[in-house]
Every structure is written in structure tokens, then in C-alpha cells.
Amino acid sequence: MIKPTVLITGAGNGIGKATALALYAKGYKLALIDRDVASLSKLNAIGAIAVCSVTDSSALTLAIQSLETQVGPIDILVACAGVGSLTIVPDLNIPDLRQMIEVNLIGVANAIEAILPGMIERKRGHIVGIASVAGFRGLPWMISYSASKAALIAYLEGLRPGLKRRGITVTTVCPGFVRTAITQDTPFRTPVKMLTPDQAALYLVRAIERRPRDYVFPFSTRVGMTVLKIVPNRLFDWMMDRAGPRALTSEF
Figure 1 (cartoon, rainbow, N blue to C red):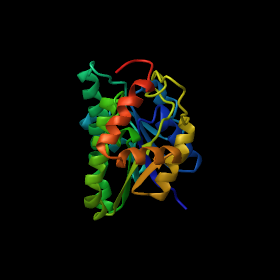
Figure 2: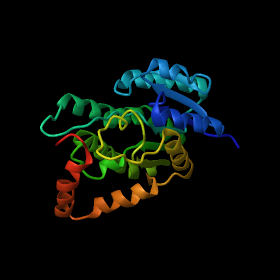
Figure 3: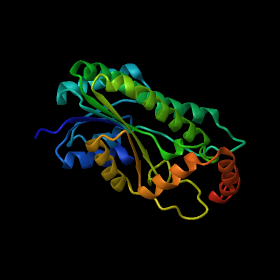
Figure 4: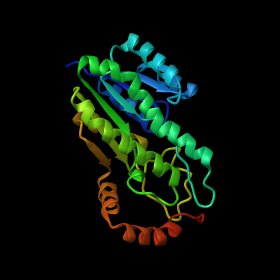
């Protein structure tokens, strides 16, 4: 059976790189995009590569067109490119917020816009957006990151009905803590159990192949964050008032 062709943004590092390697091992054809030239160049043996930022819509469209001439039409988009950092009151750091919105939300939208005409014409396709459990509620030490991922979750949800009518599936993936550049320097007061990128990639491959509406992992995080999502607002505020100061070595 011929495997689909997968486009991965943010493929040079972290979950994107681990997922690319896992899919290659399973026989998928790969088109890989990242702005990190050095990291991406190490993957040219497993797929077609293009150096590009997802925030540059024109360059991204041209890059994807070039990749499709090498590997064929894109069947699956895995939008992995993302950035994140701490945001703690009173330093709201608006430039960081702007960057997170540009990459984590608009960057995903740019990638979708670039591959969508072909998918619509073929009446099939699968879009996998990498959001985060941090988008379930506003976390007081990840204010901007939570906002960008919450926006992405809503964006993918809004796209889903219209794309479903055109034969295109949308999966929203929300990982828990993964040991990447986004999380490894967070000053947690006590050690936090995190998945490795390789472990996260196994979950992500499962989401790619099963095409669920939503996919939250690991199970323990899915349970905990689902509870936080549905608790009354006053109870959530009470929990954050107490848990927030104890989560990090820095104050908020």
C-alpha cells in the first residue's frame, strides 16, 4: 500500500523532527519545512526540504509548490512550527506575544492556505494542527502561549465543518509537557514529568493515521486538563491563585 505524502512544518527540531523520522521509518513520503537551515539540512536524506518561515505566506506558498514538484501532491499537513516562552505579570512582553500569535496561529493558517487549493481540488486531505493543553485555560505563567494555542484550537474548530464538506479532515492535537526548547528552561519549582520528542512523535503518528477530531496526550494530562477545562471559573481562579505561585521558582 502506497503511503500518503506528508508536509511537516517546524520539521527541523523537537516534535516536528521526531515525527518526521517516525513517519519516514513507516514509509511515508516527506516534505519538510523549517527556518533553521542547519537543523533542516540534516534531514535531506529522508525527504524533500525547504528553508522557510511559516510567517512569510508568499515564501511559504512558493516553498510548498517547489516541494510538491519533488514529492507529489500533499495528502497530509502536520503544522508543527511553534514558539513559546514564559509570560508573567507584570512583564507582559508584547513583542513575544506578537511572535507567538504570528507563528502559532497565523503560521498555521498560512500553511493551511497554501495546501488547501490542492486538497479541495482532489477532494481529500488531512490537516493536523499542533496546539497544546495550555490552550484549554489561561495559565498564569504562560499567558501569551496559552492565548496563541487557544486561538489555534478555535481556528481549527471553525475550519472543520466547511472542510469536512470538501473531503478534508481536521485533527487538533494537544500535547502535554514535552521536553523541547519551549519547556526545558521553564523554572518549575519541582520536577515535572515530560515526554521526550520521540515519545510525543509516536502519539502524533497515531493521530495522523487514525484521524480523530481531537487528540490529547498523554492520558494523565488528558484527564487533568479536561477537568481544568470544565471546572467552574471561580474554582479555576481559586486553583490558579494557589497553584500558580507554587509552580515556578519565579513569582508572578
